Image (cartoon, rainbow over all chains, first blue to last red; front, side):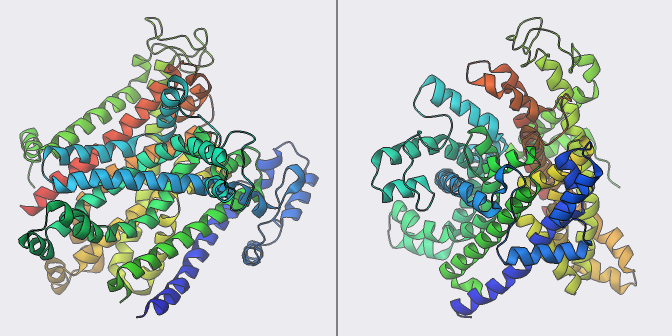
Length: 336
Length: 285
Protein backbone atom coordinates (compact mmCIF):
# COMPACT_ATOMS: atom_id res chain seq x y z
CA UNK A 1 0.00 0.00 0.00
CA UNK A 2 1.37 3.41 -0.82
CA UNK A 3 1.62 6.00 1.90
CA UNK A 4 -1.20 7.94 0.31
CA UNK A 5 -3.54 4.98 0.24
CA UNK A 6 -2.64 4.24 3.85
CA UNK A 7 -3.39 7.80 4.91
CA UNK A 8 -6.78 7.71 3.21
CA UNK A 9 -7.70 4.37 4.79
CA UNK A 10 -6.58 5.58 8.17
CA UNK A 11 -8.66 8.74 7.86
CA UNK A 12 -11.71 6.61 7.11
CA UNK A 13 -10.96 4.50 10.17
CA UNK A 14 -10.92 7.64 12.29
CA UNK A 15 -14.56 8.40 11.50
CA UNK A 16 -16.04 5.51 13.54
CA UNK A 17 -13.69 6.36 16.40
CA UNK A 18 -14.89 9.96 16.43
CA UNK A 19 -18.51 8.81 16.22
CA UNK A 20 -18.04 6.45 19.14
CA UNK A 21 -16.39 9.13 21.25
CA UNK A 22 -19.10 11.67 20.41
CA UNK A 23 -21.76 9.11 21.28
CA UNK A 24 -19.98 8.41 24.55
CA UNK A 25 -19.98 12.11 25.39
CA UNK A 26 -23.67 12.29 24.49
CA UNK A 27 -24.45 9.32 26.72
CA UNK A 28 -22.52 10.83 29.59
CA UNK A 29 -24.03 14.29 29.22
CA UNK A 30 -27.64 13.46 28.39
CA UNK A 31 -28.51 9.92 29.33
CA UNK A 32 -26.84 9.50 32.71
CA UNK A 33 -29.19 10.09 35.62
CA UNK A 34 -28.99 13.68 36.76
CA UNK A 35 -30.81 16.50 35.04
CA UNK A 36 -28.32 19.10 33.81
CA UNK A 37 -30.85 21.88 34.13
CA UNK A 38 -31.71 21.09 37.73
CA UNK A 39 -28.02 20.63 38.42
CA UNK A 40 -27.47 24.09 36.99
CA UNK A 41 -30.23 26.12 38.57
CA UNK A 42 -30.76 24.05 41.70
CA UNK A 43 -33.73 22.16 43.09
CA UNK A 44 -35.42 25.33 44.28
CA UNK A 45 -35.96 26.84 40.83
CA UNK A 46 -39.54 27.12 39.68
CA UNK A 47 -40.77 24.26 37.45
CA UNK A 48 -41.69 26.81 34.80
CA UNK A 49 -38.15 28.16 34.62
CA UNK A 50 -36.77 24.61 34.43
CA UNK A 51 -39.15 23.79 31.56
CA UNK A 52 -38.12 26.96 29.76
CA UNK A 53 -34.40 26.17 30.08
CA UNK A 54 -34.97 22.58 29.00
CA UNK A 55 -36.75 23.85 25.92
CA UNK A 56 -33.95 26.31 25.20
CA UNK A 57 -31.38 23.49 25.36
CA UNK A 58 -33.56 21.13 23.37
CA UNK A 59 -33.70 18.72 26.30
CA UNK A 60 -37.47 18.33 26.02
CA UNK A 61 -37.20 16.59 22.65
CA UNK A 62 -37.05 12.78 22.37
CA UNK A 63 -33.57 11.41 22.99
CA UNK A 64 -32.88 10.21 19.45
CA UNK A 65 -33.78 13.65 18.08
CA UNK A 66 -31.44 15.27 20.60
CA UNK A 67 -28.72 12.92 19.41
CA UNK A 68 -29.27 13.83 15.77
CA UNK A 69 -29.34 17.56 16.61
CA UNK A 70 -26.16 17.17 18.61
CA UNK A 71 -24.29 15.45 15.77
CA UNK A 72 -25.59 17.84 13.11
CA UNK A 73 -24.62 20.87 15.19
CA UNK A 74 -21.14 19.48 15.78
CA UNK A 75 -20.68 18.73 12.09
CA UNK A 76 -21.43 22.36 11.37
CA UNK A 77 -18.81 23.29 13.96
CA UNK A 78 -21.49 24.66 16.27
CA UNK A 79 -20.60 23.92 19.89
CA UNK A 80 -23.38 26.13 21.21
CA UNK A 81 -23.19 29.08 23.56
CA UNK A 82 -22.13 29.27 27.17
CA UNK A 83 -24.96 29.37 29.69
CA UNK A 84 -23.37 32.02 31.90
CA UNK A 85 -21.85 35.50 31.60
CA UNK A 86 -22.84 37.02 28.30
CA UNK A 87 -23.38 33.63 26.69
CA UNK A 88 -20.14 33.56 24.75
CA UNK A 89 -19.70 31.12 21.88
CA UNK A 90 -18.26 27.93 23.36
CA UNK A 91 -15.77 27.19 20.62
CA UNK A 92 -14.29 30.70 20.98
CA UNK A 93 -13.85 30.23 24.68
CA UNK A 94 -12.19 26.88 24.06
CA UNK A 95 -9.87 28.48 21.54
CA UNK A 96 -8.91 31.10 24.13
CA UNK A 97 -7.75 28.39 26.51
CA UNK A 98 -6.53 25.63 24.24
CA UNK A 99 -3.15 27.20 23.23
CA UNK A 100 -2.11 27.34 26.90
CA UNK A 101 -2.85 23.63 27.26
CA UNK A 102 -1.07 22.83 24.02
CA UNK A 103 2.01 24.75 25.15
CA UNK A 104 2.06 22.94 28.49
CA UNK A 105 1.47 19.56 26.84
CA UNK A 106 4.31 20.08 24.39
CA UNK A 107 6.57 21.20 27.22
CA UNK A 108 5.63 18.17 29.31
CA UNK A 109 6.07 15.92 26.31
CA UNK A 110 9.60 17.18 25.62
CA UNK A 111 10.62 16.79 29.26
CA UNK A 112 9.18 13.27 29.44
CA UNK A 113 10.90 12.19 26.22
CA UNK A 114 14.26 13.64 27.28
CA UNK A 115 14.15 12.10 30.76
CA UNK A 116 12.74 8.86 29.39
CA UNK A 117 15.43 8.56 26.73
CA UNK A 118 18.18 9.27 29.22
CA UNK A 119 16.97 6.83 31.87
CA UNK A 120 15.91 4.23 29.32
CA UNK A 121 19.29 4.32 27.60
CA UNK A 122 21.12 3.93 30.89
CA UNK A 123 18.92 0.96 31.75
CA UNK A 124 19.16 -0.58 28.29
CA UNK A 125 22.94 -0.41 28.04
CA UNK A 126 23.53 -1.67 31.55
CA UNK A 127 20.69 -4.17 31.44
CA UNK A 128 20.65 -6.60 34.35
CA UNK A 129 22.89 -4.43 36.50
CA UNK A 130 22.30 -2.21 39.49
CA UNK A 131 21.74 0.85 37.30
CA UNK A 132 19.10 -1.05 35.36
CA UNK A 133 17.33 -1.95 38.59
CA UNK A 134 17.41 1.64 39.83
CA UNK A 135 15.97 2.87 36.54
CA UNK A 136 13.16 0.35 36.86
CA UNK A 137 12.35 1.62 40.31
CA UNK A 138 12.58 5.17 38.95
CA UNK A 139 9.97 4.38 36.32
CA UNK A 140 7.55 2.96 38.89
CA UNK A 141 8.11 5.69 41.46
CA UNK A 142 7.74 8.70 39.14
CA UNK A 143 4.47 7.34 37.77
CA UNK A 144 3.05 7.25 41.30
CA UNK A 145 4.01 10.85 42.05
CA UNK A 146 0.75 12.71 42.54
CA UNK A 147 0.97 15.72 40.23
CA UNK A 148 -0.47 18.37 42.61
CA UNK A 149 1.87 17.39 45.44
CA UNK A 150 4.92 17.24 43.18
CA UNK A 151 3.96 20.58 41.66
CA UNK A 152 3.52 22.26 45.04
CA UNK A 153 6.86 20.94 46.27
CA UNK A 154 8.60 22.28 43.18
CA UNK A 155 6.82 25.61 43.70
CA UNK A 156 8.06 25.67 47.28
CA UNK A 157 11.67 24.83 46.38
CA UNK A 158 12.18 26.80 43.16
CA UNK A 159 9.60 29.53 43.65
CA UNK A 160 9.71 30.34 47.35
CA UNK A 161 13.06 29.13 48.70
CA UNK A 162 15.31 29.75 45.70
CA UNK A 163 13.17 32.50 44.17
CA UNK A 164 14.34 31.27 40.79
CA UNK A 165 11.08 30.57 38.96
CA UNK A 166 7.50 31.90 39.03
CA UNK A 167 4.95 29.63 40.71
CA UNK A 168 1.87 30.36 38.61
CA UNK A 169 0.43 31.90 35.47
CA UNK A 170 1.72 31.81 31.91
CA UNK A 171 3.67 35.05 31.60
CA UNK A 172 4.40 38.23 33.57
CA UNK A 173 1.55 40.72 33.19
CA UNK A 174 2.19 43.24 30.44
CA UNK A 175 4.61 41.06 28.53
CA UNK A 176 2.01 39.14 26.50
CA UNK A 177 3.12 39.03 22.86
CA UNK A 178 0.62 39.93 20.12
CA UNK A 179 -1.56 36.88 19.46
CA UNK A 180 -0.78 34.93 16.31
CA UNK A 181 -0.87 31.27 17.33
CA UNK A 182 -1.77 31.77 20.99
CA UNK A 183 1.36 29.86 22.00
CA UNK A 184 3.34 32.49 23.91
CA UNK A 185 6.71 30.96 23.05
CA UNK A 186 6.00 30.98 19.31
CA UNK A 187 4.32 34.37 19.40
CA UNK A 188 7.18 36.06 21.23
CA UNK A 189 9.67 34.64 18.74
CA UNK A 190 7.51 35.90 15.87
CA UNK A 191 7.29 39.32 17.51
CA UNK A 192 11.05 39.24 18.27
CA UNK A 193 10.36 39.97 21.92
CA UNK A 194 13.14 38.50 24.06
CA UNK A 195 11.62 39.64 27.37
CA UNK A 196 8.33 37.90 26.56
CA UNK A 197 10.10 34.76 25.47
CA UNK A 198 12.15 34.53 28.66
CA UNK A 199 9.13 35.22 30.83
CA UNK A 200 7.04 32.61 29.02
CA UNK A 201 9.81 30.03 29.28
CA UNK A 202 10.32 30.72 32.98
CA UNK A 203 6.60 30.27 33.63
CA UNK A 204 6.52 27.10 31.58
CA UNK A 205 9.49 25.49 33.33
CA UNK A 206 7.94 24.14 36.53
CA UNK A 207 4.61 22.97 35.09
CA UNK A 208 6.30 21.17 32.18
CA UNK A 209 8.82 19.56 34.46
CA UNK A 210 6.06 18.35 36.81
CA UNK A 211 4.03 16.87 33.98
CA UNK A 212 7.06 15.50 32.14
CA UNK A 213 8.69 13.85 35.14
CA UNK A 214 5.54 11.92 36.04
CA UNK A 215 5.10 10.58 32.52
CA UNK A 216 8.79 9.92 31.79
CA UNK A 217 8.68 6.51 33.48
CA UNK A 218 6.64 5.09 30.62
CA UNK A 219 9.39 6.00 28.16
CA UNK A 220 12.08 4.64 30.45
CA UNK A 221 10.72 1.11 30.11
CA UNK A 222 9.86 1.46 26.48
CA UNK A 223 13.30 2.77 25.49
CA UNK A 224 14.95 0.12 27.65
CA UNK A 225 13.16 -2.87 26.18
CA UNK A 226 13.29 -1.55 22.65
CA UNK A 227 17.01 -0.72 22.91
CA UNK A 228 17.79 -4.13 24.37
CA UNK A 229 15.98 -5.83 21.54
CA UNK A 230 17.83 -3.82 18.89
CA UNK A 231 21.20 -4.31 20.58
CA UNK A 232 20.69 -8.06 20.38
CA UNK A 233 20.19 -8.05 16.61
CA UNK A 234 22.63 -9.24 13.98
CA UNK A 235 23.32 -5.89 12.40
CA UNK A 236 24.64 -4.56 15.69
CA UNK A 237 26.96 -7.54 15.96
CA UNK A 238 28.07 -6.77 12.41
CA UNK A 239 28.81 -3.19 13.41
CA UNK A 240 30.81 -4.42 16.34
CA UNK A 241 32.71 -6.86 14.13
CA UNK A 242 33.65 -4.00 11.85
CA UNK A 243 35.22 -2.31 14.86
CA UNK A 244 32.81 0.58 15.33
CA UNK A 245 33.00 2.21 18.73
CA UNK A 246 30.24 1.61 21.24
CA UNK A 247 29.13 5.21 21.05
CA UNK A 248 28.73 5.22 17.29
CA UNK A 249 26.85 1.95 17.38
CA UNK A 250 24.51 3.30 20.05
CA UNK A 251 23.76 6.71 18.60
CA UNK A 252 24.07 6.09 14.86
CA UNK A 253 22.62 2.61 14.56
CA UNK A 254 20.84 1.27 17.61
CA UNK A 255 18.98 4.29 18.90
CA UNK A 256 17.39 5.18 15.58
CA UNK A 257 15.85 1.72 15.31
CA UNK A 258 14.94 1.58 18.95
CA UNK A 259 12.91 4.77 18.66
CA UNK A 260 10.41 3.35 16.17
CA UNK A 261 8.21 1.42 18.64
CA UNK A 262 8.26 4.47 20.89
CA UNK A 263 6.39 6.41 18.23
CA UNK A 264 3.35 4.15 18.61
CA UNK A 265 3.26 4.91 22.29
CA UNK A 266 3.02 8.63 21.64
CA UNK A 267 -0.69 8.57 20.80
CA UNK A 268 -1.64 7.00 24.11
CA UNK A 269 1.00 9.06 25.87
CA UNK A 270 -0.75 12.14 24.57
CA UNK A 271 -3.98 11.15 26.29
CA UNK A 272 -2.03 10.79 29.53
CA UNK A 273 -0.45 14.20 28.95
CA UNK A 274 -3.86 15.82 28.48
CA UNK A 275 -5.22 14.17 31.63
CA UNK A 276 -2.11 15.12 33.61
CA UNK A 277 -2.34 18.64 32.25
CA UNK A 278 -5.69 19.12 33.99
CA UNK A 279 -4.06 18.55 37.38
CA UNK A 280 -0.90 20.48 36.47
CA UNK A 281 -2.94 23.45 35.31
CA UNK A 282 -5.05 23.61 38.44
CA UNK A 283 -1.94 23.33 40.61
CA UNK A 284 -0.08 26.11 38.80
CA UNK A 285 -3.13 28.27 37.99
CA UNK A 286 -2.25 27.78 34.33
CA UNK A 287 -5.09 29.29 32.25
CA UNK A 288 -5.66 26.27 29.99
CA UNK A 289 -8.49 23.92 29.09
CA UNK A 290 -8.24 21.99 32.35
CA UNK A 291 -8.62 25.01 34.62
CA UNK A 292 -11.37 26.26 32.32
CA UNK A 293 -13.29 22.97 32.38
CA UNK A 294 -13.08 22.63 36.16
CA UNK A 295 -14.15 26.24 36.63
CA UNK A 296 -17.17 25.76 34.38
CA UNK A 297 -18.11 22.58 36.19
CA UNK A 298 -18.40 24.55 39.42
CA UNK A 299 -20.70 26.99 37.59
CA UNK A 300 -22.63 24.08 36.02
CA UNK A 301 -22.19 25.63 32.59
CA UNK A 302 -23.60 22.59 30.83
CA UNK A 303 -23.03 23.56 27.19
CA UNK A 304 -19.43 24.59 27.82
CA UNK A 305 -18.68 21.37 29.70
CA UNK A 306 -20.12 19.32 26.83
CA UNK A 307 -18.24 21.40 24.26
CA UNK A 308 -14.93 21.02 26.04
CA UNK A 309 -15.27 17.26 26.38
CA UNK A 310 -16.21 16.99 22.70
CA UNK A 311 -13.19 19.11 21.85
CA UNK A 312 -10.92 16.81 23.85
CA UNK A 313 -12.41 13.81 22.00
CA UNK A 314 -11.80 15.35 18.58
CA UNK A 315 -8.29 16.34 19.55
CA UNK A 316 -7.44 12.85 20.80
CA UNK A 317 -8.76 11.30 17.58
CA UNK A 318 -6.71 13.75 15.51
CA UNK A 319 -3.53 13.04 17.46
CA UNK A 320 -3.92 9.29 17.12
CA UNK A 321 -4.43 9.76 13.39
CA UNK A 322 -1.31 11.91 13.06
CA UNK A 323 0.80 9.54 15.15
CA UNK A 324 -0.27 6.58 13.00
CA UNK A 325 0.54 8.42 9.80
CA UNK A 326 3.96 9.48 11.06
CA UNK A 327 4.57 5.91 12.14
CA UNK A 328 3.65 4.59 8.71
CA UNK A 329 5.96 7.16 7.13
CA UNK A 330 8.90 6.25 9.36
CA UNK A 331 8.36 2.50 9.26
CA UNK A 332 6.93 1.40 5.87
CA UNK A 333 6.48 -2.18 7.12
CA UNK A 334 3.30 -1.40 9.04
CA UNK A 335 1.43 -0.14 5.98
CA UNK A 336 0.88 -3.70 4.82
CA UNK B 1 -4.82 -28.75 44.08
CA UNK B 2 -1.45 -27.63 45.33
CA UNK B 3 -1.30 -25.81 48.63
CA UNK B 4 0.20 -22.39 48.54
CA UNK B 5 2.02 -22.17 51.87
CA UNK B 6 4.14 -19.43 53.31
CA UNK B 7 7.43 -21.25 52.74
CA UNK B 8 6.66 -21.64 49.07
CA UNK B 9 5.71 -17.97 48.92
CA UNK B 10 8.98 -16.83 50.49
CA UNK B 11 10.88 -19.10 48.09
CA UNK B 12 9.16 -17.49 45.15
CA UNK B 13 9.94 -14.04 46.53
CA UNK B 14 13.61 -14.85 46.89
CA UNK B 15 13.80 -16.41 43.45
CA UNK B 16 12.31 -13.31 41.91
CA UNK B 17 15.07 -11.11 43.37
CA UNK B 18 14.31 -7.42 43.07
CA UNK B 19 10.78 -8.11 41.90
CA UNK B 20 10.10 -10.26 44.92
CA UNK B 21 11.21 -7.56 47.31
CA UNK B 22 9.26 -4.95 45.39
CA UNK B 23 6.18 -7.09 45.75
CA UNK B 24 6.66 -7.54 49.48
CA UNK B 25 7.27 -3.82 49.99
CA UNK B 26 4.10 -3.05 48.04
CA UNK B 27 2.14 -5.57 50.08
CA UNK B 28 3.36 -4.02 53.32
CA UNK B 29 2.18 -0.54 52.26
CA UNK B 30 -1.20 -1.91 51.20
CA UNK B 31 -1.54 -3.88 54.44
CA UNK B 32 -0.78 -0.83 56.57
CA UNK B 33 -3.40 1.19 54.69
CA UNK B 34 -5.92 -1.62 55.06
CA UNK B 35 -5.29 -1.75 58.80
CA UNK B 36 -5.71 2.04 58.98
CA UNK B 37 -9.04 1.80 57.19
CA UNK B 38 -10.32 -1.18 59.15
CA UNK B 39 -9.42 0.11 62.60
CA UNK B 40 -9.79 3.85 62.00
CA UNK B 41 -11.91 4.23 65.14
CA UNK B 42 -9.11 2.85 67.31
CA UNK B 43 -6.17 4.50 65.55
CA UNK B 44 -7.45 8.02 65.04
CA UNK B 45 -7.20 10.10 68.22
CA UNK B 46 -9.93 12.56 67.19
CA UNK B 47 -13.15 12.70 65.23
CA UNK B 48 -12.04 13.49 61.66
CA UNK B 49 -14.83 15.96 60.94
CA UNK B 50 -14.79 17.82 64.29
CA UNK B 51 -12.84 21.00 64.89
CA UNK B 52 -10.54 20.11 67.76
CA UNK B 53 -7.97 22.89 67.84
CA UNK B 54 -6.77 26.13 66.31
CA UNK B 55 -6.32 26.15 62.50
CA UNK B 56 -2.96 25.06 61.01
CA UNK B 57 -1.27 24.14 64.29
CA UNK B 58 2.12 22.55 63.52
CA UNK B 59 2.73 18.90 64.47
CA UNK B 60 2.99 18.53 68.24
CA UNK B 61 2.40 15.78 70.80
CA UNK B 62 -1.23 16.84 71.00
CA UNK B 63 -1.72 16.81 67.21
CA UNK B 64 0.93 14.44 65.83
CA UNK B 65 0.46 15.62 62.22
CA UNK B 66 -0.82 19.10 63.08
CA UNK B 67 -4.27 20.51 62.35
CA UNK B 68 -5.79 21.47 58.99
CA UNK B 69 -7.04 24.81 57.70
CA UNK B 70 -10.07 24.90 60.00
CA UNK B 71 -8.58 23.10 62.98
CA UNK B 72 -9.33 19.42 62.39
CA UNK B 73 -6.71 16.81 63.26
CA UNK B 74 -4.72 15.93 60.11
CA UNK B 75 -3.69 12.50 61.38
CA UNK B 76 -7.27 11.49 62.11
CA UNK B 77 -8.39 12.75 58.71
CA UNK B 78 -5.65 10.81 56.94
CA UNK B 79 -6.57 7.63 58.85
CA UNK B 80 -10.27 7.97 57.99
CA UNK B 81 -9.40 9.12 54.48
CA UNK B 82 -7.88 5.72 53.77
CA UNK B 83 -11.36 4.32 54.21
CA UNK B 84 -12.85 6.66 51.61
CA UNK B 85 -10.27 5.98 48.93
CA UNK B 86 -10.20 2.21 49.51
CA UNK B 87 -13.99 1.91 49.38
CA UNK B 88 -14.19 3.95 46.19
CA UNK B 89 -11.38 1.97 44.56
CA UNK B 90 -12.87 -1.35 45.63
CA UNK B 91 -16.32 -0.55 44.29
CA UNK B 92 -15.11 0.96 41.05
CA UNK B 93 -12.72 -1.89 40.32
CA UNK B 94 -15.38 -4.50 41.07
CA UNK B 95 -17.71 -2.69 38.69
CA UNK B 96 -15.25 -2.31 35.83
CA UNK B 97 -14.10 -5.92 36.24
CA UNK B 98 -17.63 -7.30 36.23
CA UNK B 99 -18.31 -5.52 32.94
CA UNK B 100 -14.90 -5.61 31.28
CA UNK B 101 -13.92 -9.22 31.95
CA UNK B 102 -17.10 -10.98 30.69
CA UNK B 103 -17.23 -8.73 27.64
CA UNK B 104 -13.57 -9.48 26.92
CA UNK B 105 -14.12 -13.22 27.30
CA UNK B 106 -17.13 -13.25 25.01
CA UNK B 107 -15.68 -10.87 22.46
CA UNK B 108 -12.38 -12.70 22.20
CA UNK B 109 -13.97 -16.14 22.13
CA UNK B 110 -16.73 -15.49 19.63
CA UNK B 111 -14.69 -13.17 17.41
CA UNK B 112 -16.01 -11.91 14.09
CA UNK B 113 -18.17 -8.81 13.75
CA UNK B 114 -19.15 -8.72 17.41
CA UNK B 115 -15.52 -8.71 18.44
CA UNK B 116 -14.64 -5.96 15.97
CA UNK B 117 -17.48 -3.76 17.19
CA UNK B 118 -16.67 -4.25 20.86
CA UNK B 119 -12.97 -3.69 20.27
CA UNK B 120 -13.54 -0.51 18.34
CA UNK B 121 -15.75 0.88 21.11
CA UNK B 122 -13.37 -0.14 23.88
CA UNK B 123 -10.29 1.11 22.03
CA UNK B 124 -11.93 4.47 21.48
CA UNK B 125 -12.75 4.86 25.16
CA UNK B 126 -9.27 3.65 26.06
CA UNK B 127 -7.73 6.33 23.86
CA UNK B 128 -9.67 9.06 25.66
CA UNK B 129 -7.84 10.69 28.60
CA UNK B 130 -9.04 8.76 31.65
CA UNK B 131 -9.15 11.58 34.16
CA UNK B 132 -11.10 13.81 31.76
CA UNK B 133 -13.69 11.10 31.14
CA UNK B 134 -13.99 10.60 34.90
CA UNK B 135 -14.36 14.37 35.34
CA UNK B 136 -17.20 14.46 32.80
CA UNK B 137 -19.07 11.57 34.41
CA UNK B 138 -18.47 12.90 37.92
CA UNK B 139 -19.62 16.38 36.91
CA UNK B 140 -22.89 14.97 35.58
CA UNK B 141 -23.55 12.52 38.43
CA UNK B 142 -22.60 14.91 41.22
CA UNK B 143 -20.49 14.17 44.28
CA UNK B 144 -20.76 11.05 46.43
CA UNK B 145 -19.03 7.75 47.08
CA UNK B 146 -21.19 5.75 44.65
CA UNK B 147 -21.02 8.35 41.92
CA UNK B 148 -17.26 8.63 42.17
CA UNK B 149 -16.98 4.86 41.96
CA UNK B 150 -19.08 4.84 38.81
CA UNK B 151 -16.97 7.61 37.24
CA UNK B 152 -13.80 5.63 37.85
CA UNK B 153 -15.37 2.34 36.74
CA UNK B 154 -16.28 3.76 33.33
CA UNK B 155 -12.66 4.73 32.75
CA UNK B 156 -11.20 1.30 33.53
CA UNK B 157 -13.66 -1.04 31.79
CA UNK B 158 -11.59 -0.99 28.55
CA UNK B 159 -8.39 -1.90 30.44
CA UNK B 160 -9.88 -5.20 31.62
CA UNK B 161 -11.66 -5.81 28.35
CA UNK B 162 -8.52 -5.40 26.24
CA UNK B 163 -6.36 -7.53 28.48
CA UNK B 164 -8.84 -10.42 28.75
CA UNK B 165 -9.70 -10.32 25.05
CA UNK B 166 -6.03 -10.45 24.06
CA UNK B 167 -5.45 -13.43 26.32
CA UNK B 168 -8.50 -15.27 25.06
CA UNK B 169 -7.47 -14.73 21.44
CA UNK B 170 -4.15 -16.46 22.01
CA UNK B 171 -5.59 -19.18 24.28
CA UNK B 172 -8.40 -20.02 21.90
CA UNK B 173 -5.99 -21.52 19.39
CA UNK B 174 -4.04 -23.58 21.90
CA UNK B 175 -3.96 -27.32 21.92
CA UNK B 176 -5.66 -27.92 25.28
CA UNK B 177 -8.63 -25.83 24.24
CA UNK B 178 -8.86 -27.59 20.91
CA UNK B 179 -8.64 -30.93 22.69
CA UNK B 180 -11.48 -29.94 24.99
CA UNK B 181 -13.53 -28.91 22.00
CA UNK B 182 -12.76 -32.20 20.25
CA UNK B 183 -13.99 -34.04 23.32
CA UNK B 184 -17.29 -32.26 22.94
CA UNK B 185 -17.07 -29.60 25.64
CA UNK B 186 -19.57 -26.79 25.20
CA UNK B 187 -18.42 -23.23 24.61
CA UNK B 188 -19.60 -22.24 28.05
CA UNK B 189 -17.62 -25.07 29.65
CA UNK B 190 -14.49 -24.19 27.67
CA UNK B 191 -14.75 -20.56 28.71
CA UNK B 192 -15.35 -21.43 32.33
CA UNK B 193 -13.02 -24.40 32.87
CA UNK B 194 -10.21 -23.86 30.42
CA UNK B 195 -9.89 -20.23 29.43
CA UNK B 196 -10.94 -18.31 32.52
CA UNK B 197 -8.49 -20.04 34.92
CA UNK B 198 -5.62 -19.26 32.55
CA UNK B 199 -6.59 -15.60 32.40
CA UNK B 200 -6.94 -15.40 36.14
CA UNK B 201 -3.29 -14.73 37.01
CA UNK B 202 -2.99 -12.02 34.45
CA UNK B 203 -6.09 -10.42 35.88
CA UNK B 204 -4.27 -10.26 39.23
CA UNK B 205 -1.36 -8.37 37.66
CA UNK B 206 -3.56 -6.00 35.68
CA UNK B 207 -5.72 -5.51 38.76
CA UNK B 208 -2.91 -4.16 40.89
CA UNK B 209 -1.38 -2.00 38.16
CA UNK B 210 -4.82 -0.68 37.36
CA UNK B 211 -5.64 0.06 40.98
CA UNK B 212 -2.42 2.08 41.22
CA UNK B 213 -3.70 4.18 38.35
CA UNK B 214 -7.23 4.38 39.76
CA UNK B 215 -5.89 5.69 43.07
CA UNK B 216 -4.20 8.57 41.31
CA UNK B 217 -7.35 9.27 39.28
CA UNK B 218 -9.54 9.22 42.40
CA UNK B 219 -7.12 11.52 44.16
CA UNK B 220 -7.18 13.76 41.08
CA UNK B 221 -10.98 13.92 41.02
CA UNK B 222 -10.98 14.59 44.71
CA UNK B 223 -8.33 17.31 44.31
CA UNK B 224 -10.59 18.98 41.75
CA UNK B 225 -13.48 18.81 44.23
CA UNK B 226 -15.43 16.23 42.21
CA UNK B 227 -15.29 13.24 44.54
CA UNK B 228 -17.02 12.73 47.88
CA UNK B 229 -18.67 15.81 49.40
CA UNK B 230 -17.01 17.72 52.22
CA UNK B 231 -16.54 17.16 55.20
CA UNK B 232 -15.87 13.45 54.46
CA UNK B 233 -12.12 12.98 54.85
CA UNK B 234 -10.58 12.37 51.43
CA UNK B 235 -6.86 12.68 50.74
CA UNK B 236 -7.02 14.56 47.45
CA UNK B 237 -9.54 17.09 48.69
CA UNK B 238 -7.68 17.64 51.97
CA UNK B 239 -4.53 18.29 49.97
CA UNK B 240 -6.40 20.85 47.88
CA UNK B 241 -7.67 22.56 51.04
CA UNK B 242 -4.18 22.94 52.40
CA UNK B 243 -2.78 24.31 49.14
CA UNK B 244 -3.18 27.98 49.97
CA UNK B 245 -1.13 27.60 53.15
CA UNK B 246 1.56 25.42 51.63
CA UNK B 247 3.74 28.08 50.03
CA UNK B 248 3.89 30.07 53.25
CA UNK B 249 5.63 27.09 54.83
CA UNK B 250 2.66 25.35 56.46
CA UNK B 251 3.30 21.99 54.86
CA UNK B 252 1.52 19.50 57.10
CA UNK B 253 -2.07 19.73 55.79
CA UNK B 254 -0.71 19.00 52.29
CA UNK B 255 2.23 16.69 52.80
CA UNK B 256 0.62 13.93 54.88
CA UNK B 257 -2.38 13.21 52.64
CA UNK B 258 -0.19 13.73 49.56
CA UNK B 259 2.43 11.25 50.69
CA UNK B 260 -0.28 8.71 51.49
CA UNK B 261 -1.68 9.02 47.96
CA UNK B 262 1.78 8.45 46.49
CA UNK B 263 2.59 5.57 48.84
CA UNK B 264 -0.67 3.75 48.21
CA UNK B 265 -0.36 4.13 44.42
CA UNK B 266 3.27 3.04 44.67
CA UNK B 267 2.29 0.06 46.81
CA UNK B 268 -0.11 -1.27 44.19
CA UNK B 269 2.34 -0.42 41.41
CA UNK B 270 5.12 -2.40 43.09
CA UNK B 271 2.78 -5.28 43.85
CA UNK B 272 1.72 -5.44 40.21
CA UNK B 273 5.28 -5.31 38.91
CA UNK B 274 6.39 -7.98 41.35
CA UNK B 275 3.40 -10.24 40.68
CA UNK B 276 4.03 -9.94 36.99
CA UNK B 277 7.53 -11.35 37.34
CA UNK B 278 6.79 -13.88 40.09
CA UNK B 279 3.76 -15.33 38.30
CA UNK B 280 5.54 -15.09 34.96
CA UNK B 281 8.35 -17.26 36.33
CA UNK B 282 5.87 -19.82 37.49
CA UNK B 283 4.47 -20.09 34.02
CA UNK B 284 7.89 -20.69 32.48
CA UNK B 285 8.60 -23.63 34.77
